[in-house]
Image (cartoon, rainbow over all chains, first blue to last red; front, side):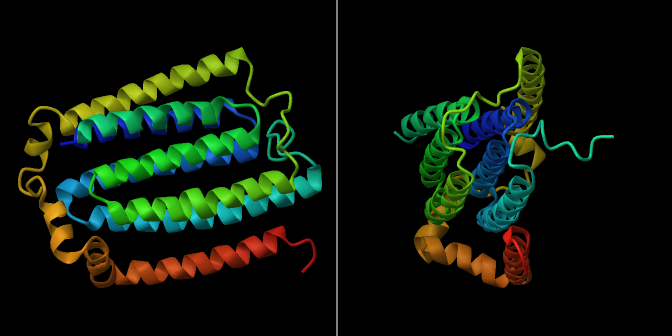
Amino acid sequence: MLLGPALGLSAILFTIGVAGVMIRRNAIVIFMCVELMLNAVNLTFVAFAQQFGPEGQVIVFFVMAVAAAEAAVGLAIILAIFRHRETVDLRDINMLRG
Amino acid sequence: MREVLFWGFAGMAIISAFLCVTRRSAVSSALWLVSTLFDLAAIYVLLDAQFIAAMQVLVYAGAIMVLFLFVIMLLNLGREGPGDLKGWGGRIVATALAVGLVVELWALKAALAGEGGFQAVTAAYPLPEGTVAGMAEAQGVVGLIADTLFRQYLVPFEITSVLLMAAVVGAVVLAKRKL
C-alpha cells in the first residue's frame, strides 16, 4: 500500500516548488516551479485513485490540459514582456508596484 | 519490490526537484525538471496508472518542456548568468515558510493516511486494495479511463477543448509582434 508514502512525496515536491517560486527571480524558472507544484498535486490524485476508483486519473488528465494551456499563455506573456523590457528578471518588472 | 522501486524513484524525484530549483542556468533547471517528471511517470506506473504515466512522458516531459526550452533558447537565457537566486535574507525566509508548509502538509497526511485515520474518515467509500488494478486488468488500462472520461466527464472534456482553443488563440495574440 503506497498511499501514505505517495502523499508524503507529493507534500515534499509541492514544498520544493513553493520554495522555488520564493527564492528565484527568473520568470521562466518560477514558471517551471509552478509546473512542479502541479505535478505534486497530480501525484496526490493518482495515489487516491487507487482507493477511490479511476476518477482521480481522469482529473489528472484535466490538470494536464490546464497546465499545457497555462504554459502556452504564460510563455507568450513572458515573450511579450521580454520584447518590451529585454529582461525576464522580476526585479526589473515592477510596473504594478505602488 | 514495489516499495524498493518507489523509494528509489521518490529519492531521485526529490533530488532532481531540488537541483531544478537551485541551478543557476535556466537550461539545467529545465533538464532537472524533465528528470523529475520522468521519475514521477515511473511512480505513476507503480501506482497502477500506466496510461497517466504515458501521458506524463508525452505531454509534460515531451511537449511542455520542449516549449520551455524553446522559449529559453529564443530569449537566449541559456548561458550561466550571475544567478537569479535571492540574497540570504530572502532564502532564509523562503526556507522557513517552506518548512512550515511541509509540516502542515505532513500533519494533513498523518490525519488522512495514518493508522486507521484514512479508513475512519472515508469508511463508507474506499474500494478494497487492488480493485482499480483488477478493473484495469478487466477493461484495459486505457478503457478504464476512457469509460469514465467519456461517460461521466464528457461535458468537462468538451469544455477542455474550448479552453485549449482559447489558450492557442491567446498565445498567438500575445506573442505576435503585429497582428
